[in-house]
Image (tube, rainbow, N blue to C red; front, side):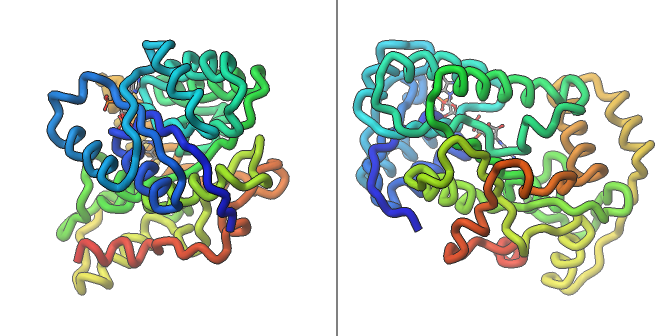
Length: 310
Ligand SMILES: NC(=O)c1ccc[n+]([C@@H]2O[C@H](COP(=O)([O-])OP(=O)(O)OC[C@H]3O[C@@H](n4cnc5c(N)ncnc54)[C@H](OP(=O)(O)O)[C@@H]3O)[C@@H](O)[C@H]2O)c1
């Protein structure tokens, strides 16, 4: 495992995934800098999280992507930048790319991705494709600027997908009823947030992953929705009532949805659970599989993750 200590700036450290990234960076002993926006002072949970980071050794830097001086000043203090900026703010990272160009000390940039490999999602439909398009624009800007990068493809984050057995907007496993997409048989990749964060932090000092896509595909977590549901039923010793939603019915739900955010979310569910996430092999992409690179790292299995909720 790569163990060189670095100075790491986390942008978006007060967010859902960013908090895990800060924790992982600190756990690996990297000098960890967290950019926080002045507006967080009125959000108690974000302030508490920042203070926890500080008590564990992180340095807190006031700034934002709208404030170029704050970015340049933060960047001058670090070797690596990891961004977990919100999905609807992805293009703001172009300012970060510009700021990185102004300094010459950044050895690696991990932009906010942590989902599907966006260069392999070119057939996604609007408005679900907007986030993929934005992430692609950021990729091209990074490459154009010759900034050393790693793109992390994390697939289904566990709190979003596994915790609710892939029920849209549900973050605890249901105990009575579950919707199944199609026959629930398309293989998906489920990854715990702590593992996304740890793999990301392992990669930043690993020369093998420079200018590569890192695919998070923990072998035991490549499971269909039905396999995940059966796993949960086994754990709670009960069978859930199931509603099977055909592809046609789900496409009709997407069509009927008027809220753009929900329409995009339903399209992402379509891509994931009707089309599946294994439509390409890592081999041949030029990318790398984390389970090959970091064999000794013990990831959280889907079963162990679900056991937390029993
Ligand atoms: N694969 C999956 O299942 C999955 C699921 C969810 C997310 N994701 C991906 O994970 C990434 C992170 O998403 P998230 O849900 O963790 O985001 P989030 O919780 O919304 O957090 C966003 C972070 O960005 C910061 N931010 C926003 N605007 C900023 C600005 N102008 N300057 C500096 N910081 C700014 C926020 O700061 P404040 O605290 O000050 O607002 C916050 O720290 C995204 O790329 C998203 O697409 C993937």
